[in-house]
Image (cartoon, rainbow, N blue to C red; front, side, top):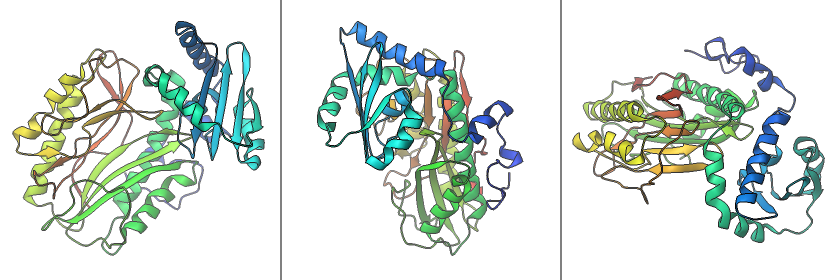
Amino acid sequence: MAIDVNERPGRLAPDLALPPHLQPILEAEYPRFSAGEMARRRSAIEHLLGELDLDYLVYCGANRFGSAVQWLTGWPVTAEAVGVLTPGTPDALFIQHINHVPLARQLAAPAEVAWGGGSSIGAAVAALERRGAHYLRLRQIKSAEEIDWMRIGAALTDRGMVALRDGLRPGLTERELADVVERAYIALGGTNVIHFFGVTPMANPAIGVPTQFVANRKVKAGDVVVAEISAAFWEHPGQVLRSFAVDAEPTKLYRDLHAAADAAFDAVAAVLKDGTMPQQIIDAASLIEQAGFTIIDDLLHGYGGGYLPPVLGSRSRPGAQVPEEPLRAGMMVVIQPNVVTPDGKAGVQTGELVLITATGIEPLHAVPRGLARV
C-alpha cells in the first residue's frame, strides 16, 4: 500500500480512496453537516435540558479544546468561544479574536456570532462540569453523519501512518518523522491531533510507550519505532497505532511483545458489541499478563468528541475505575494494547479506531497490522 506524499493534493491515493459518497464532503470549500444533523443535535440537547428542568445551556472551548462548540455550531474553536443555547432561539456565540469573527459567522450560522471582548470562560467551564456526564453520554453515540466524517479522519490518519512506514529510514530525526506524517494529510484538509513516536534500540531498549514530544534524535538501524497517529477532518479524527523494526529483523523480545499485543487486540475485538461490559474487555486482555507482560498506555478508550468513556486499563495496570455501563452500538473506541516488559523499558503498540455495532465491531482503518520491518 505504497503512497507518494508528493502526489497532486486534493485526492487520496487509489489504494486509500474514500467511498464515492464521502468524496464531496472532503472536497467542499468548507464542509458542513446537514441542517437535519445539526437539528438532531440541538433537539437532543433541548430534550436533556427539559429532563433537568433547565432553561439555558452555556458551552465553551479554548485553543481547539472543548468539543461542544463545534458539535453544536460547526465552529472549530480557535482562541476561545463561549455559547449560550436557549430552546427556540438562535444560539449566541462569542469568540476570540475579533479577526476570527467573519469566518465563524460563515461556519457557525445560524448562531448569532459576535466578538466576545472579555472572557466568561470560567463560569462556562463550571457550568459544563456540573452537567458534563450528561453531555458525554450524548457524544458517545455517533450519528451516521458523524461516522462518515470520522471515516474521512481515519483515512487521513491512515495516510499519515503509511507515509511514516514508507518513509522510515536510518538518519531521519524524530522531528523529520513528524514532518513526513503531517505532509501526508495537510494538503487534503487534515489537521494534526497527535503523532507520538517511541524510538529506541531493540538490542538495548529504554522506551516502552510513544512519547508526547519528539526528541532531536536520529533513527538508527536496529531501532524500533512505535507510533500513535491521529489526524482529524474538522475535529473528527481517526487513530491508528503501529510498530516498525528499522533496517533489521525484529528481535525475539519484540516478536514476543507484538504477538501478545496482536492476541490482546483480537481477544478484545472478539468480545466488543452492543451490551459488552467493560470488565469483559479487561478479562479478554488478561493474556497480556499470562504472557508475562503488562501495559503502560490505556488498553481501550472512547473517541470522537474527546477522550471519552470507557477508559480502561488491564489487570496489572488498572484504570481509575471500571465503568458499570455497557458499551452501546454507535460508540467509537480505540483498541490499543501497549504491551511492555515489566520494567517498562521495551514495548510495542498496535490498534485502531473501531465502531461498535449490534453484533460486533467495524474497523475504520486500512493500514495492515503486524510488526513490520522497514
